[in-house]
Length: 358
Ligand SMILES: Nc1nc2c(ncn2[C@@H]2O[C@H](COP(=O)(O)OP(=O)(O)OP(=O)(O)O)[C@@H](O)[C@H]2O)c(=O)[nH]1
Image (spheres, rainbow, N blue to C red):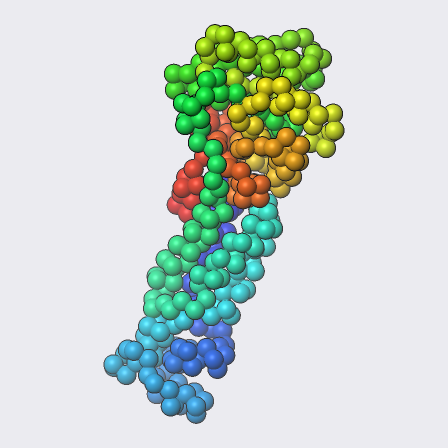
């Protein structure tokens, strides 16, 4: 999962460490006066020889701590190195390009690189291990900031409201139907009783498809005939849940293109009729920036509260997972990680950090 992002982050740490510790790049006079150490020392050259090559004005500089303690200039360099813009600019540019290639949204790629630069430039470092540790921590922090989106506390919501009404929106082919079955299973494992509303009355086979999942799971399905009013199906499901003391209502909805006006009107009507406690956008992680675009359209039309990303198990790039929460300011609550009913996990930023930097 997310191998491409993982590789790019690891390469960035390596490149910054190499660049800063090698001191290969020519530094400005300002940098030199800040560092007060020789820039780089060709291998095998005695320190004195190098010092004579320094411009005259450096001779009046105070020695850096450690310099003149019998250590070499090379060692002093490590004691005193202050990370400059020149050390990181090229690497951060490469990182930004690599993030875009991995389907990370432009705004997110810029935020990560800008934050990383702010953390690194001006920082004094002593050893290459310190540079890599610090860069790694700074990168983790930048990624965590992007992933940490306030929002929904699902267990708390379930405790507060019975039945909890959740409406799932998203376009066809993203795995919405399977996801609803997985969420039903998630609640059942917590000892709660869900009911499913087959409110996708538009797509041929949709009612049968969700019906098969409901049968396998042993969950009550509320359905009408194909072409019926989806809002009426959702309403009946909520009424059933209230009458039977069920805990959660999971409403499947139709999923034509997000630009389809009729679809959005249909979603808005269901929302008006059943007033769901939570509207969850289901998107396919593999579609990258498209998933973000779809989420934004559904958000405009009906207002979404949270996101579930499917097929994260097959997602090598990871761009949608990294960007979607930040871009639409709504949290990812679950990730689909396979085709089985149990292949769903609660999303936590810490988990994603672990995946990306382990
Ligand atoms: N690998 C993997 N496959 C998934 C995941 N979620 C769903 N799928 C698969 O994606 C395919 C489509 O899933 P469906 O649930 O039928 O999705 P759908 O047809 O878009 O459902 P609608 O939204 O109702 O149109 C199925 O083969 C699912 O098993 C997941 O998290 N990981």
